[in-house]
Amino acid sequence: MNYQLTVTVRSQGLYDITHKVVEKVAEARITQGLATIFIQHTSASLLIQENADPKVLRDLENWMNRLVPEGDGLYTHTQEGLDDMPAHIKSALTASSLSIPIIEGRLALGIWQGIMLWEHRHHRGVRDIVVSVIDAGLQA
Amino acid sequence: MNYQLTVTVRSQGLYDITHKVVEKVAEARITQGLATIFIQHTSASLLIQENADPKVLRDLENWMNRLVPEGDGLYTHTQEGLDDMPAHIKSALTASSLSIPIIEGRLALGIWQGIMLWEHRHHRGVRDIVVSVIDAGLQA
Amino acid sequence: MNYQLTVTVRSQGLYDITHKVVEKVAEARITQGLATIFIQHTSASLLIQENADPKVLRDLENWMNRLVPEGDGLYTHTQEGLDDMPAHIKSALTASSLSIPIIEGRLALGIWQGIMLWEHRHHRGVRDIVVSVIDAGLQA
Image 1 (cartoon, chains in turn brown, purple, blue):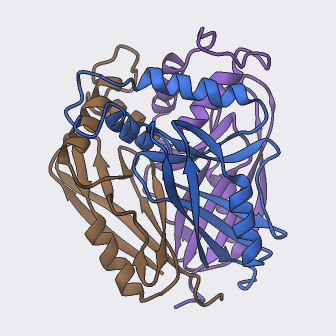
Image 2: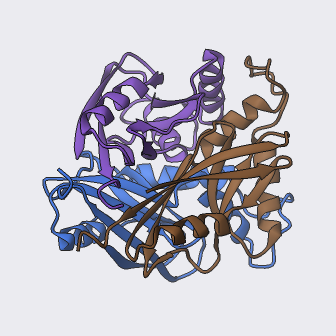
């Protein structure tokens, strides 16, 4: 079972999408299985990170912006904006897909884990995600 | 259903393997499910990236070669060649496995997404990949 | 079928957990399918790497410690220790989940591939992992 999901972004940054994924998994009504989240873009990515202290996400973003700065003389792909090539590199360094087990009907996330969409561009817009749920309970 | 796939590489670089993965997924003849691509090596990796402007892939490769240069004095694992330890590091920073939903019998890739094998060594050779297809339609 | 697995860590470093994952996969007694490994933490991660020369793992760790040093003035999330924010960044750069096909009852790892838990903090403790096994043989 595959579920489409959209996330509205306002600017570069990390967006906690855990509740949206949890909702889709609940719809699937399975007990044991696996949920896979896939992002259909190459300038935004997925990440599991701490959802407690917002400073973690801010530091992460600042660190990544320092590692992959805009305006680097190395870039030749520049016609789509200063933020485009850094966005592709950041996506390559993080994940396009994430898989999380479903145990007793719930995503088996650790206590501090949240699922984040990492928007690497500065634009406002909508990002498309697919949540794929596989039932392993049928297979027992 | 698991399908073996081989990719011939001529040198370091990114190889678009989307069509090869699409072929294997078509063989599976399923409507709803999940495809997982796994690379059986630790000096080459997998990546979903933009398949439109070739400059994106070139910039990505040049950026990574600058971040993880050959001949770094830090390396002690040097007996397999100057390109070997950088290849392991680049593999660690990218993906060994990728999962992509299958919707209406097709890989649910975004419009600009291609599946790439990233060869991190300079050699010519053959790389082994497994495409694993899980049917979620049976489970509805 | 989902299997809980714990790994005791003594300090920062890479721990080969292949045998533990292999054991869980053997319990599932399936022929064709997919194993997914998920770590329930955000300051430790998963990696597939060479298991032959221990220098590879040492160089990898030293390289990562140089890229993401402790005490970087950029960090504002500092109250959980000098090693905490670097641990979150290293986790973001590596994997929280890995998927490996199961062929003829065995994990289809390449000849030099091992599954590693990468502990990014200095503490001693126990890390929680879930191994999720999906049977694709039923679906043939």
